[in-house]
Amino acid sequence: MLTKQCLAALLGGLSLAVAQTSSVENPSLEEIEAARATVLPYSPVSNVRGLAFNRFVNIWLENTDFEVAAKDPHLSKLAEKGLLLTNYWAITHPSEPNYCTSAGGDTFGMDNDGFNQIPANVSTIADMFDMRSIAWGEYQEHLPYPGYQGKNYSNQETGANDYVRKHNPLILYNSVTQDSTRLRQIKNFTTFYDDLKHERLPQYSFVTPNMTNDAHDTNITFAASWTWRFLSELLEDEYFTKDTLILLTFDESGTYEIGNRIYSFFVGGAVPENLRGKQDDTFYTHYSIIASLSANWGLPSLGRWDCGANLLSWIAAKTGYVNWEVETGNLLLNETHPGPLSDGEHTTFSPKWPAPLTTGRCSAGHGILPIVQRTWKHLAATFNYTSPIPYDSVSGNNVGVKYHRTLKNGKTETGITE
Image (cartoon, rainbow, N blue to C red; front, side, top):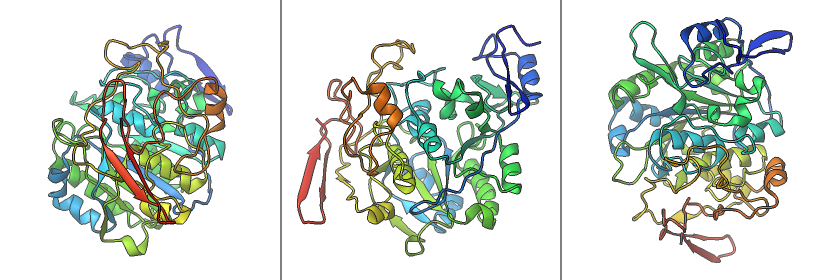
């Protein structure tokens, strides 16, 4: 039976059980089953033309060093169908802060896999997409019902880990969890195949396999085999692949003591013909994806680390932006700078929440998101978000890394994180 704190909301003539249970973190099985019976997924559809692709699919696996993943025959064979990225970096360790970055452009000091919640005044890619009515969604394998906010959901037959909240980017943000419509756009794989069948996939989606299929509780051989089966069939589907850019990457490397470079590749119909079967050595991070999404659809920046991030090389060529070349010899990106979500400071009311940029030019070239400007206009940016590399001068995190570029007029620009 649902507790008194579990609210019911009426939306579009449907009864929606909002996941505000007596324990959002650890709801009872009875509460989960009651919500499962009433919460329906929401699958908006849009067709906003992009500069280089019309649909983007983000698929993440877990905790594997670049060299280990590169040796797997299933992954290497898939990479040959598209474009291998040899210089793509995760942001930090452990898992959750990397997922966090993919949606909000920052770690906010997160250095743990805890039950973190980010205040509603922090904007995400959902705000970017909603600004131009670009349909978005997440597909989380074995999520018990749309918008489930619990910490995990185990296999009810074997007890094995299946869905975990720490691998779900947008569920970390209160701007999403406090909106019943947005919650229903966070769905499971059953809904993915249903949306595929009825041709109502969103233009942006984030796909998270369960803890077995993503290599977290198994190994790269198992996860790569799953990936081969999952993607091979989809790549034969014209609706799925047409004008679609599919990124297969990892949240982080498996070894904390080395640089956090991760095996990544693009496949799909939107991979330029002249780049297929080749490799791209441009320096990218998880933040580069947000920046490239912004450039592709003409969207303003979040004003955080996406602002200075390199764009995908062929998008940069289309926009005229010149990417930075980063000297990665002493780059690790394996620690998180301090912030409100660092261990020991878990509070959504901390005065230390970093302020984003509200003015200035970002790599995507479309300014700063208006809601970010309105919310944070009286505060100076906490970090140098125009840098292509995230760093913190106060703690010394990632300082001393040099970068440079040569502009089209022949002028050379240099920088260093200090």
